[in-house]
Image (cartoon, rainbow, N blue to C red):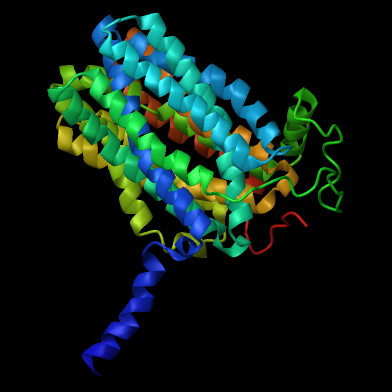
Length: 436
């Protein structure tokens, strides 16, 4: 057998395990993917710089954890409302408006740092505005993907999205560590503002994406859900009513809330970077570690699309996440902690892809914005509530104990939920009934 024949046989084998890049052939998705990836690098730089600045001002992990609450409230309110709006107006227009809100908040962070205002409350207020923009843009962006891609490519598109976001979660904190070690906070926020323009450009280049229909159509599996025709409170409630009737989707949100709220240790990174490891350089690696694992997991994610028992796989991935977090909290070597957090990051990427794919391929289009709003609250709000949990527990029993016990508690609770949720464990893409 020739070397050329060996190579031809090996290529399909590699494709079974490496990331599927087929969705990048679609120009609109490709631009959105690149813009999101570049802008998210800056977002991650700010996500490190803000808690480090707050810790420098207060010398308290409690206040760092409280940033999670400041982020969470706008996420809940505007994430749900933004999802309802996304079901009633052009999603491209909504993405642009909300992106400008987040960009303006980033420019305000630059200004307060340049003026050396050193005001904790001003920083908190700006973070709330930034969170508002993010909360509205995320449901719009998530509900755009199924409109750009054929159904069979949604899983691969989500994997690409989560991988590039985790690549940003890896590189952003590393950039932040270098910047904060050699420059001031304004340089970190300024980089975020500059990179954000890539996301704005990608949003401008999207085609118009209006609602498919202003009047939802009933089907045997999906009765009429929203008769208001407007994105008000009743529309948001209709989304929750629909979600409540779908146990698989509902429990996929519940297990993710457990994973993020109970086990996320990132609010403890600034304190332990100083007390256990090696200052600002260590904090960058700790914040980047989850991204390291997620990127590696994404690059070797070709197998994800072949998994049909997605509910069972989701539970397994979160168990791995919790165990990895607990083990990393017991590590006294920076590099061992980073390696273990990376394992958790890979598991987190797998769980995120399964949850997003289950939602996008099952929910009907007229509900996708609202369900993406709930997804935003859970995915983005869960870690922030986890910051509050980690900071509060650290104030009571210490940062190390908060980190370790959170991981083990996550494993116990997710196993319990799995045992009590047979519908989630049985979920199989080959037999599941989606929207018609």
